[in-house]
Length: 391
Image 1 (tube, one colour):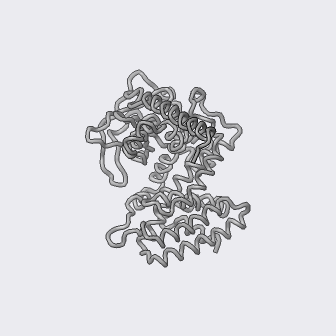
Image 2 (cartoon, helix red, strand yellow):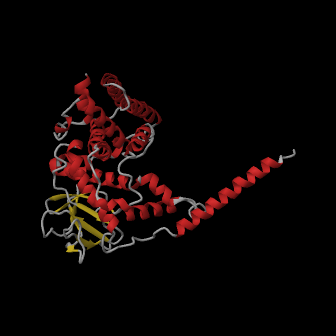
Image 3 (cartoon, one colour):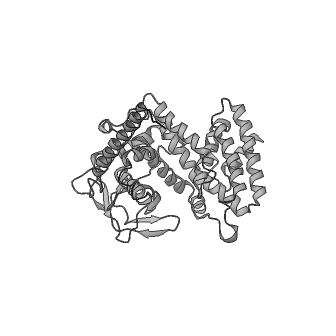
């Protein structure tokens, strides 16, 4: 069979373009940071993002969650070598950090960062232990103070690229555009700031309801009563449940949303009964939705409230940040999150509860004003509140 010349020319053009793009990707990857540009201090850009987080939480955090805007919640960020403590209310913070819910003491004494300030105030650092312990992405305590904890954005990008390299086939690792992947997963500086909000809300949960947070973190299916992650019929039932939630958060009226909430609760009850879930596993679902679903909700809601507030002005120092778009991309982020709800049914791990909990919180915003004051009760969970308002 004779191949037409124009077809060969087109194929050659596509091949040449692929080779050029591959070459560009390889060159860009060679210039990617392998370690933090500043290790022993926080860079101006890292401090700008952190300053913006403190400011935006104080400015719109009360619209996200009552009292969160005025709560004293310091932040620990860490890179490959140091943990940094910012916004601590006392001049002499107790040594190290307490990992929760294990209540295990980690780290050493905090030292003032020499010749550097954060928002005009001193901040602290300590070298990370040689055994690899880090404060992790969650909440810890420094003394009695609950603190949000996460990596710096720069170290997050480096670590994420390293993880991709480890997980990819060796022939693909040099050509994958890691910078683009980082933008997709972290979603720029707004995404990083919203992730700080997520961990900050965990600190708020610990401060207001420490026993409930500990119970939720300790919740795990045990022994023969393990959660049926891989059961095909269970996954199919979860798929229906998540699809209803995705439709509900996009409903065009509270009446339609309430009807979909009823369908969700009926489907949830049917799934649980068909799977024969024990009381332990029922509570496990509720606890993970409470701890991670609410934090995901706050993460998104902070971004949305900052986007909606026409009077809000981000810190000046972020004007030089090419990864910051002034919260104007929230609608894109929200559409991505809604789309992701329906893709979590076969997720092995508690990722589905981030989305099912977040969606229920969004629905409760419409159907039950004041619901946020009720979720601190030890025996109240999101689907309980939904059932109370739509039954």
